Amino acid sequence: MPMAGKGMLLTSMDIDAADEAEFNRWYDRQHLEERVAIEGFLEARRYIAHQASPKYLCLYSTTTIEVLDSPAYKTRLANPTEWSKKTMARFKNMIRAVARITISRGQGRGAALGIVRLRPAAGEEERLRSALRDALGPQRFDGIISMHLIESDRALSGPTTEIPSAASAGAGDWFVLIDATDVNAASTAAALLVDGAPFKSAVISAGTYRLMWDLANSDIPA
Image 1 (cartoon, rainbow, N blue to C red):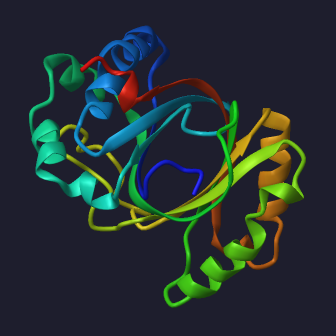
Image 2 (image 1 turned 120 degrees about the vertical axis):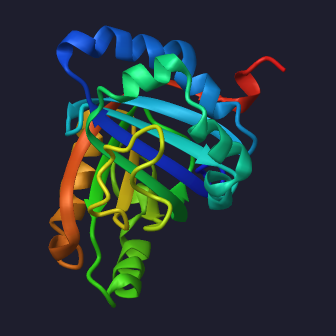
Image 3 (image 1 turned 180 degrees about the horizontal axis):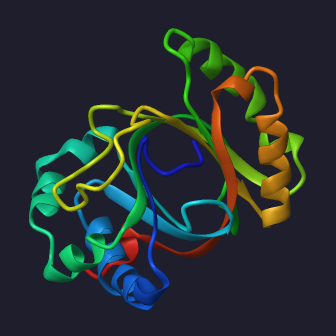
């Protein structure tokens, strides 16, 4: 499996232009390392929208989804720094999804990311999952490195102590992640996926992001 671990936390948000410099400083100088240092976290990747909404996206890989319901993680959520409290209160259009990685094909990570948000109808989950198993083949698309499906856990996703504004609507949504060498390849693959007959009725949104930077747990000094 090319995606590190079997669990993932996806967060995405907008921020007012007046607060953007401080927001990025907080993410880059405190928040990413603070999260990745938690036991069971493996890595994190920060993205900025090329053609997508919200503007910022972060993917945190964990050994299992249970890490995102662990005492260590809950303790961190319950004890945010003052900088975190101040910054998170400014988030807008927040998405927070705690998910299982259920399909992962290909190898490696790209400089660009395509993302398709899906909302399976009740009782249609296995049909959609089966169709995605057939569709997520990176070798079918030029410039695509790997493709993944993450399925949100409704009970674990949504608001937290730190970010009570996170939307709970669609907390059980799924996300297809398309790792690509450039945004054009990611956009093409996402568009072809969205146009596929098995998926059209489940699609909520699609977009492309550029990688800002990534951090692995092994990068953090012991």
